[in-house]
Image (tube, rainbow over all chains, first blue to last red; front, top):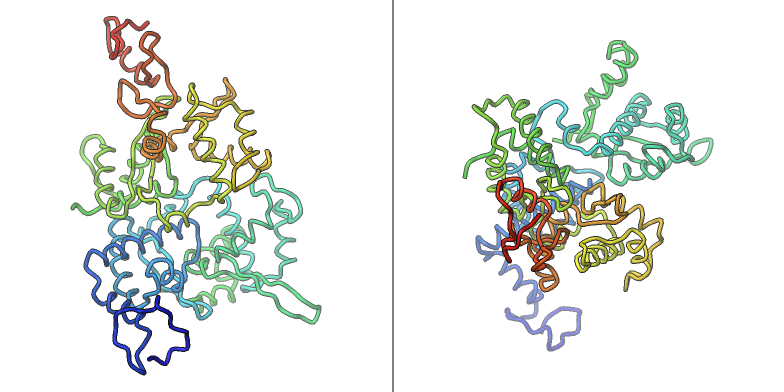
Length: 249
Length: 234
């Protein structure tokens, strides 16, 4: 007899103690198995997690802790720290990537970070059309940064229109620009926030979690300063805001 | 197991991002990586040596930098391939189930054809019947085909208005083609690897790659003979 609320059928018979307060025997069996994972099994999981992080990173898909537990660890979250350590080793040895753990909006995310700190590497790595998309992204991020990290959607499109990127027309390089912007939001480079203002509903664009992680605000400000040919410190507010940037290490 | 240096990390990262590069691009890339990393190597840079080093680390992750030859041009390519098709690798794909169905149909038609290619008009009619995945518009199919040519899965031969298997398909899917289409594919009688697009000996009908025949002929001063039936080739 158990205190389980489910109806027990013959299929539920599983090894394990049965008493009034015993846990579901199937879960118990799994925990026992988890504790007794052989070295080969652990290695297999480490490889799978490393591959999972690699493939997700390729597509700029943010990896949540829950995804890892579901797809790789098959609902055994206790294994995560040990397996992650092994995966980290493989990714560091082979690619010199490290795995960053980021808490954002009460969710844990895992992103690959490139340890190779050399100028222009990011540009070298990406295929050409992705480089151009990256250029557009940096411009958008600079607009947002100069607006103190909160830029209204209509203002953003007005600024982009000046550069020849129109919300309604197909762009020769970027195609459907609105669709591309939504892609950036999905990849967490940009964040969209709906707010109620005195004038009604408005959509604000902010830097996304991945932008904070991969792109330095200081560099963006430097870029804007070089275009205007002034000193970075001219923009006191933005310059000092770097102190309070999202701590992602 | 030797550890990898900065130049190797940069190189493998770039290959993983670009997926396939020509041998010339790969040679330029490794030299650039070595330059930027500040390491000094005496003598010429041995690309294959560096690739072997990188592969020794990649193999445990079921990944590989694999070399292959384009059946159309004879140029060599290096591709970053995934050696294990599983749930995890399927995540990485940018293509939908319908796109896959069309791609599979395309390569099947090319493999099963006599000439190892499919005419452009035939390639479009293929999307009218994708089994479970129903139909696809011609406009959609054209966008996909262009993308696949850019990624070198396919090659568009403008002169004959047809599509052939590109170097990426040959390198990544070579083993799959062998196992799935065994009886229908012949090997090149010169290099003994899968030959989808090539020529046949007029006398004994054995198949061989254009570039394999070219290499044989350019090396010999005497008359070149078919390795199978020994008849003379012009």
